[in-house]
Length: 241
Figure 1 (spheres, rainbow, N blue to C red):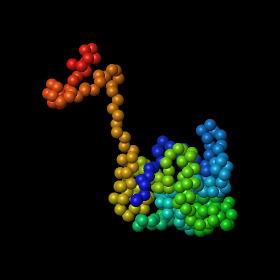
Figure 2: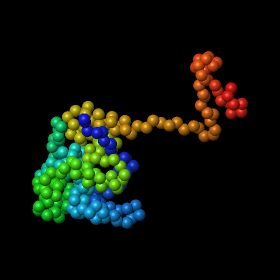
Figure 3: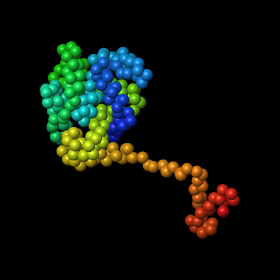
Figure 4: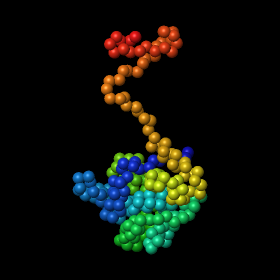
């Protein structure tokens, strides 16, 4: 059985979603709509360092359009603070390449690492508590589960890669940009991503009548009445004609 299809984060929630991710990455807290502060780390009963890592992982996964395996093995040595980029080792036969990364994300990640104990850290950029690589099951349960609770949406690690692809297409309209970001060797693979997202975004139009009263739709007759396939037309004053 293949991987279940995933969806990008809905566009109308994206700004709030990533604002929450930045806030979690910096403080382990988010701001409610009424302006009050929600201490997510305390609510979850988890270490603040772990909650902050959840926010950082979501930001890195989207910024670099990472599959989970790529996120889990991303190393500190792959990140260039001066060049504002990260060397991504793509899986599934993808092309290894550098992806531009915002200065703020790199700075926040390094600040988080500087505040962690030595036992927490490893050559991996965002390790688990033990210093080992993150677990997909734990990430989908804890990090994605946290955001599912905040926003009430279905979310897995791959939704973040889908979101990066969709945002690249929305911002540039150039499939080659999306191809480079995702590390696909063939643009045909990227076309599958784009077509999948276009299909999900499509909605069958529900035509709205013009203003003013509209007559009901004609009713089909039974076979043989006024000839096969004829219609009985409803007249609002006389009933069925």
